[in-house]
Length: 253
Image (tube, rainbow, N blue to C red; front, side, top):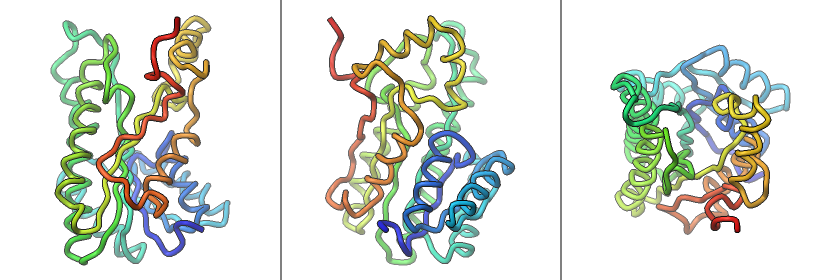
């Protein structure tokens, strides 16, 4: 198993891509610390891990609270027995034109999607360097981290920032044996995007964005996350792997 004797911390692990990743890491031998701002969802992910024969522990975490992040990283490390991998999966989105976007909503999206990634990564990297260990970070970016779409100003800005922060951290910690990469999903069916699939017309629009004429599933994004976290990607750092069903391959004629 690729992650036997590895210790993984996942933010936003109570649902969607974070949940799928937590379960997949555990299936491949990792001990997983599942964090979420909603502790009940984190507990349900751990229950699923344990039902599959894996080991996981749930922790409440608001990724925008610096003190809470520092404390959580230390607590997770002590509980699991160490830390090797961080997956920054916690995220939110908005659907609003830039002309109508409230300041408070802008701040909410930016705080969770990029400030939270910075805080968790900084605490994790400090922990690794204090221990003199290598490791890996995988950030959840988006296709909207390399392109744009209408009515997504805060989300698009935050995901572009994730891509940039991924590159910056990779440059700074590569010599220490720590790799930092990101995954850029296309539209993926999760609780965050479920509203897209409630109307037939909207669902067809989502399909038409992708060359494969379908949306992604959380487990498909998880497989890419595990690849980047594994030794199979030992010479990959600073990259954003698009897992987008051909969305950005080119415009359909």
